[in-house]
Length: 216
Image (tube, one colour):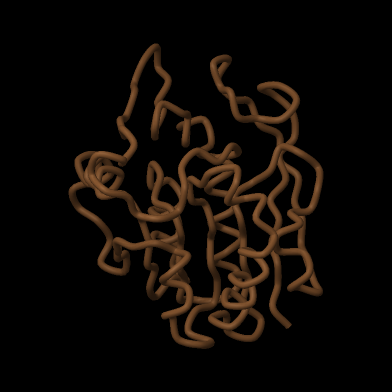
């Protein structure tokens, strides 16, 4: 998922965005607030991200359920002992459970706001975090916010643990996380989006970059 779409705080019912799963012409899109939050063509990139995460331990945490592509992949990895997914919107979880009524025993889905929950997670409690929430552009560009939050991500990671944000189709390291990690692993993968995809950089085909930030 490349373009942020909704803000992080939970909202009053009248302010909540419309969330729907759109299946049309063989394309599957999770729409939040009328924006493309995630699409099924992302599967191979989400799987590659999940597989990379699972190289670094056995207890994992994910922010943003989306279509559940990465969540199911992480839970299915033989190395995974536990995987917890934090999702803000109950509608997203309901859509996922309707399509996947029988979940792996090691997969847990929690409801909550990441920007609150991160301060509550125990120190050095997970081996890796996959980060793929739908957020407003003003949240992504709030340097003060990320300056408070990313040190908390580092705190909850065990030594040698990793933080993997969703892939980028722009060949730049993500500035939000860069100051807080000394080592970064980057892998390039080709992608082909739908011709209707609106959130990739520079077109609907090209290279995507998975960035893995490692805690010393």
